[in-house]
Amino acid sequence: MGKSTGLITNNIRALRFHCGEMTQQELADRVGVTRQTVNAIEGNKYSPSLEVAFRITRVFDVPLERTFQYREEVRAE
Amino acid sequence: MERDMMDLSFQEKSLWLMFVSLIGSFGFYFTSVLPTQGVNLMPHQVVLFVLAIVLLVLMQVVGQIVIALVNRRTETDERDRLIELKGSRNGAYVLATGVFLTLCAALVTEGNFAFTHILLGFWVLAQLVEIGSQLFLYRRGA
Picture 1 (cartoon, each protein chain N blue to C red):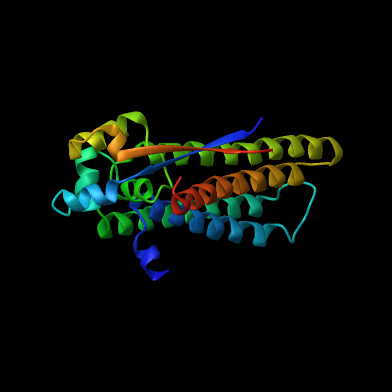
Picture 2 (spheres, rainbow over the protein chains, first blue to last red):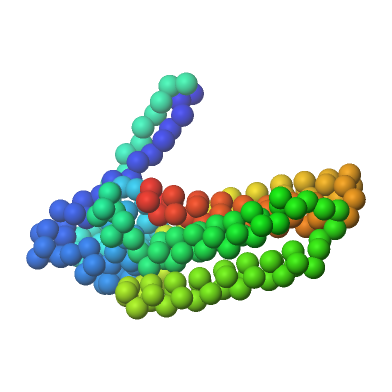
């Protein structure tokens, strides 16, 4: 039985670029988090709560799956 | 590296201030008191303890005013709260260990000098671990 680990990635940087080159601070203000949190999410260092994830997708008006992706890796033990 | 230091949030700067002021005030206290070991606390050692607390409060008040003047205060969010919880958990482990060791020390030593200083030392250490953990988590992401 392999051990599964997951990795959540995102396209926030690209979505910001296509949304009038929105800054991290602008996105943070609209979502209601700090700029440092947006930076950590973009860098895949922090996985946001579902609530924040939905709020981010609402800003870009795209489906959740276009903003966040979940990749499961199964490692053999 | 220089950019990283400039990129510190309001919360991180407050934590760094607390970290440095704890080391400064209790460093002053322990380096003054510990070389003069005794069985019981002496009155001048209690005065030094009060001085350390006053020093800590002064450093905090002045430092927080400076940080508040220089930085825009930001509201905390879910990541800040998660980091705070993780830091508190790490600090609690150290404090619990300290309380246990203090009770052991109370059983085998006379007077209140060792008892008081082991407990105080572990309290300061627990605070430093809590704040240090938070600073580490802020830099790592969460």
